[in-house]
Length: 421
Image (cartoon, rainbow, N blue to C red; front, side, top):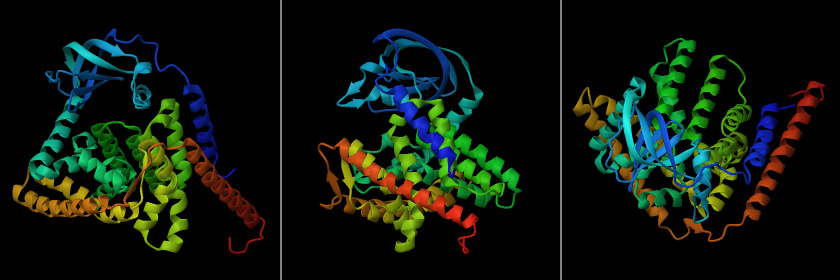
């Protein structure tokens, strides 16, 4: 059997779908009174309310008059809304909450601080320092930097979100394998002289810390666990198989939370990674351009999800990615170094900021021009699930056929029929 972990992951997908389909999301009465205790792990400032992540619940302050610091241990009282009653314009928000690993959403009435957790207090201070440092240094460009480094997309304007969506570059503002790969590369360069074992430990600890800072979203968790396992194989000098590693990570996530299959970030992150692993080499044989090959490969398995979920198809995604992908590593590196240097030398920090902002302004200018082109984006008013299903049947049939052919070639090679194998 060529990839048993892939078969296990597929079985878990089927089981998860059967288990969660048409199942009540909770047994809670709407606006039922509830009291919880837990650590404030993060605070998100939204336009109409502040949201706190406390344990397995999202706690909303609709008056925006509370200021509960990250790391405080609090006792919260309020009313919880049934996830089964949270459907808005054909969007099952309750199931989305469940897919993120939360049990419910509480509207806070009152609270009391009963202690504090020093680890999360330091995490909150670190995150605020990075966010506020970017805001001070980058001014108008800070929202983009914060979305790029900290995953804070909510601060971007609708015009910016539409620009990235229409040019097929939304993955840049959603932390995924691209971002974790760049960070791991940066760390590896900095600690290149260190023993392999210690290098693995340092990279793993830093990436786990980064995951805690930006929040354990499904796409981030998938990307970081995948990256750590792949680096582990490198340091142990073991043969790597990307699809088996991805299947192992996906299996862990499904066992932990079967509802993750309904999370769009997880779907796109998983399918994009699988698509790149499987199709990149095939495409690059003919195109001979890594950026174009990666862009085309990633979209083979993600285009149907984008079509059905976002009701549109970015037709010029290759051009969009050719604009931003070559410089995204430079932008991230300069951003991180500039905020670190801010405490050491404001002069050097501002030189890097000037260079970085020049690149960002250029990227924005080109993406804006591309996004307003008439054929840049095809809107679909009524996407059909049949088309999505038919497309995936064709693509996965090809992938299965190719896998079976490779297995046959390997078998023949072992038997001596293929001298070159």
